[in-house]
Length: 63
Image (cartoon, rainbow, N blue to C red):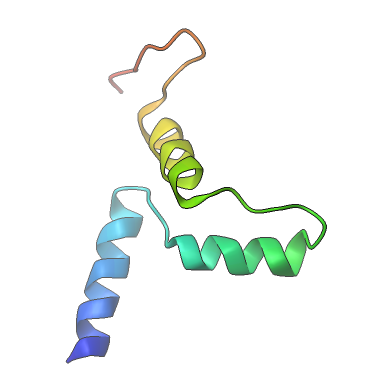
């Protein structure tokens, strides 16, 4: 039951453009071992900006 809940949560995260932070950290360790990963807060803001299109001007795009 816990595994099913975990799969549902992972799927929901991917649908809204927020992958698991743990997967990101593992990717960074594997593919970019010399670079420090973003903190959870930086990662979350980065994924939100990528999903909703925040610009350098501070604005958000609609579509």
